Image 1 (cartoon, rainbow, N blue to C red):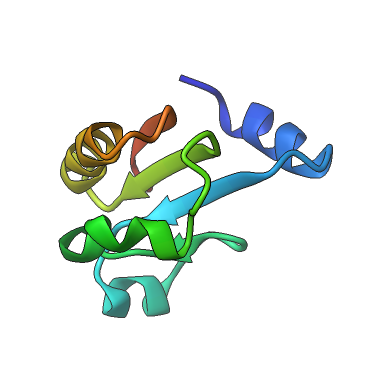
Image 2 (spheres, rainbow, N blue to C red; image 1 turned 90 degrees about the horizontal axis):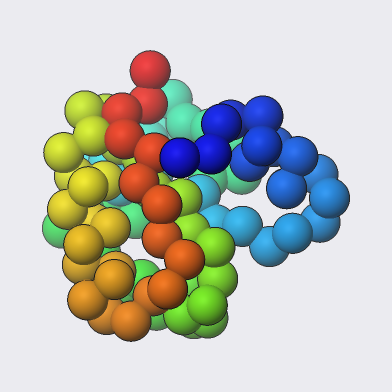
Length: 90
């Protein structure tokens, strides 16, 4: 799993990276990582609207790690190739 510094380096170098926060919208509004996109777990199948490229590098996270792990499985099933579950946001 990449470190947060490695992810930041990739973003700063201009690499196209998607940070998907799969928590509920209310939780996202309370606090979120700058540059992340909120896609609640129960809407994960709508990913094609915010990440149309199935080869894109996607990092998932949530509050406990449970939903991000499940979301990673769904995205891989949908054909996304570069999915990484970062687990719990703490």
